[in-house]
Structures are given as C-alpha cells and as structure tokens.
Length: 321
Image (cartoon, rainbow, N blue to C red; front, side, top):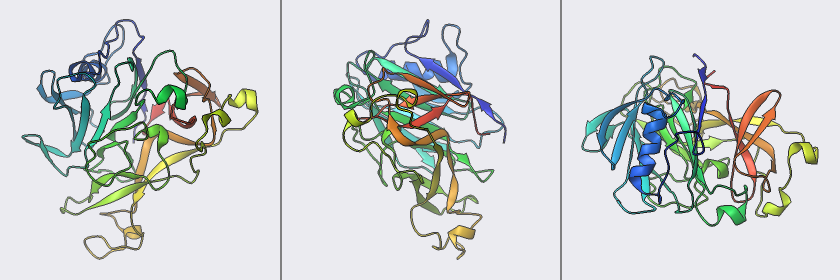
C-alpha cells in the first residue's frame, strides 16, 4: 500500500470558504473546495463528484488507482441554519440515494458560532472538525456547540482489495444515527464503540457490525480541569496507539462459510484501522487554544478536542503507510 501525503485545510487559510450559520450549502461548499476544487494556494485532495444537487447533497468518490472505490454521499433535508448533515457511504451508487453494501448513516451539525473548521485528509479519506474560534479544548468551550470531528473515507484495511472500506465513523451506534451531540465525535471515541457496518470481502452479500478496539482506554474522565497543560509543562510522556476496527462479536463466531472470523478471509475479525488516528495514554491540553498542534518525535499531530480534554491525535504527515 502506498503512503499518501496529508493536507490540512483551515477556515483561516487565505481564500478559504466559510461556514455561514451552519447551513447545508456552506458546509457542502467547504467540503467541495477541500476535496475537489481547491481554494487560494491550496490544491484539492483529488476526489471527484459522482452526483450533486447544488446546495443540498454531494456524492464524493476517491479518484486514485489505490482506492478500493466506494461513494460517500453528504446531504441535508434542511435548508435552514444549523442543518443536520448526514453521511451515507456504500460501494456503488444505485441512484435515488441508495447504495450497494451501504453502511450506517452518521450525522453532524454545526452551531451558529462554530465558524472554525479544519479538514485533514488524503485522496482516500479525511477528518472534518468544526469548533468555535478563539476557544480551548474543554467542556466550557465545547458545551456551547457540538465541536464534532468525523471520519469519512476508506479505512486502512488489512485486506486488499476491500470493497467495503468506504465508511463514516463518529457516533457510537449500531444503526442509522440521525441525532447529534458533542459526544458523537472522534475526540470521544473509545474501546468498544460501534464503528459501522462492513460487508464481506468477497461480496457474497453477508455483513457484520464492527467496533473500535483501543488498548489504551480514554483517560479524560469527566473533569476537564484535571487535564490541563501540555506534555512539556507536565512532564507526562505521551504513548500513542493505533485505533483498530474489529468485529463486534466473538472472534470465534462463524462467517458465511462456517469459518471462524478469527481465521476468515471473507469476514475477518480484525478488519483494519482508522488512518492516521491515535489514542494517547493520557489526557491533556484542555486549557490550550484550539487548534492545538503538537510534535512527537519530529512528527506533527492535530489534537482532537473533546468535552474533557485531548486523548486522540491525528497524524499530519502520511497515512495508509
């Protein structure tokens, strides 16, 4: 698998598009500029548009040969402010808003004051974060809005090709999720969370729900004031770990052919990992200004904010290594 370079897009870049009132047309415009068109001196990630209803919905597809394919449709049924935005992913667009090998719908929604946004991505997947500018990474700041970070794109699958790699991950739900809160975010992700539904590698029609697997539990607790400072100021060493996608049941459960998932080549128990995403052993940075970028062993990481501090990082050099 070829490593793909990461590009960071921000609301305060020269020529960057704005999110206005959280309405769907401005959110879609931000995504379109980052993925397809580019802006200012920033080139786009290189995705293409398979279908678009102007100001209402866009179906994005990766366009590089290394991609497993798949479609991510991002849309809203509301034309007003603070519109709930839905992400629906699948393998092939069947028209009429439906897909083959479709996963669970995930939702995000910006508050009126959440005009800051960051999109971190590659030609195969991206994280999209919105937050209030001039605030910190803690409960007081996040509680006034959603401050959600979502992943859309292909997981870094351990099996190639993986026709069901395209997905959206944010909410802890093993069903379509049409609600949103500041708990439904990559920044709050934890061991055992629902990832999404993934279909079998041989396209036999079978599928299974998959969960998040992280050996390091989320360490932030429920009091952001305990999670202040940086690793330089506190002296706490930072250890990071991949975020794995694994089956939601027992590894000895059978696939469609009666083979244990632990040994299955069609419904593997360990499917892959989230590209560029890492869990920290500690919780820090709750009093640090957003966006926070930290350097570990010469590599930059974006600190994903949450209600009670930062426990999750996104690597900013390459993914899918």
